[in-house]
Each structure stands twice: as C-alpha cells, then as structure tokens.
Image (tube, rainbow, N blue to C red; front, side, top):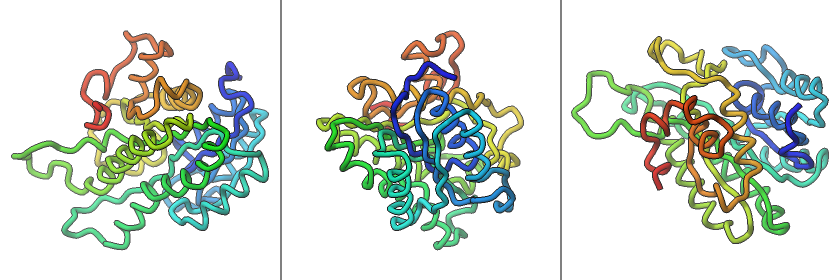
Length: 285
C-alpha cells in the first residue's frame, strides 16, 4: 500500500471502468481513500470496443482491501449524477475528492460531424464536470475543504496558425475543444471557491498513456508517439488531491511536470508536454 496521503478521505472518480480513471481509483485506495467509482459499463463485455467495467474495477479495489462502491451512471446526465452522488454519500460519507475523468470522443471533420454526437460528447467531457462539481461543492464549501481534479488532455492545445500540412489534425476538433473548455472551467471555478478552501485543478498526461481507449484510436497515432506509464497520472492525481490548495489551485498541469515540481519525480527523469514542449495556453497562466 501507499503512504496514506489520502487516509480518511472519500473520493468519487468518474469514468473509472477502465483506463486512467480505473488507475487513479486503485492508487487512491492504496493511499487510504474510500472510493466511489462511476461509469456506464456495468458488466465486462458490455462495451463493444474496449475491456473494462464497473464490476471489474470494483473487484480490483476490493482485492486491494479498499472500502469501495461501484455506481453505474451516465455522467453526461444531471439526474444520473444526482443519483450517483447520493449513492456515494450514503455508502461512504461526504465527498472530499472529486475526479472528473469521464470522457468520450469521435473523429470526423466538422463539415461532416453528426450534431447529436457532438452534443453528447460535450455532455460527457464538459457538462459532467459541472454537474458533479455542482453537486459536491456545497458540502466542500461548508466544511472549508475539498479537492476537484479535472482530467484534461494535451489535445487542448490548438494546431496554431496556418498554413497547414494536408490532413493535419483532421477529425480531432471536438475532443480538443471540450478539453480546452474544461481547462477554462477549472480556472474559473478555482477562483470562485478559493476563499472557501476548495482546490480545483486540471491534469493531463505529459505523454500518451496507452489505455484501452487510446488503443481504439491507435491507427490515428504515429508509431513513435511518446508514451508514459499509467503510474504518472495516478501519482499526479494523488498529489493534486492532497496538496495544500494554496500551492496548486487553478493549475492546469501535466503529470510529469507537476510530479517533478513537487519532488515526486527526479527532474532528470521528467519529459514530455509541460517540460520539453509548452502546454496549453491555460497551463501558461
């Protein structure tokens, strides 16, 4: 197990049926947190393209000795979020840490994109962070403490000015737009709740994490695309969920960058976005 950095805290992690969300939930348990996981895929095999489910992640958390609960819900629907937060509170107690990780994407040129799919993606990638934050903030503000970590992506960086190479970034507009909006939401909310002692941050991988989701879209990535182990995001999430709010709130940061800054990773071993190349405009503010 870990060093108990989250001992006594209750955490809620969305999009935790697989990938980064599941990894963060497991690392939180190792650090002593009681964890509620929320995702849409209930049983293994229900997702037609990727392995992972609420049942699978919950079994892994309990195998670690964790006090955990699994909740099947669509974070892109406010009523579903209300139900999920109520179930988490009933099972584990008031929420100390919220990780907004739920996300989906589709690739298509804007001129051909299905409007309904566009709106559904915004609901999961952006509106869900508002829904969940809105539901847990009153109790965080009342007690004067809380941590919200929004999982972003280096896709929030735009392609810059033209002219462009043929086919550059074709089909990737939607995901990048939702993540750029999530980062603006992060900093705006952080300013609103700073005096109440609530910490709000955004975290992206410094390099691609090879998860079930990224493997689905692997054909769109260069074979030499830099990668990093899942542990980088897991540890960075623990750091942001346990740090003094005054030292990190409002940060839009990258996994290896924030770990190196706080001495959790030797600077000589850190690389990727936020270190070797600039992050999004919001990470520069």
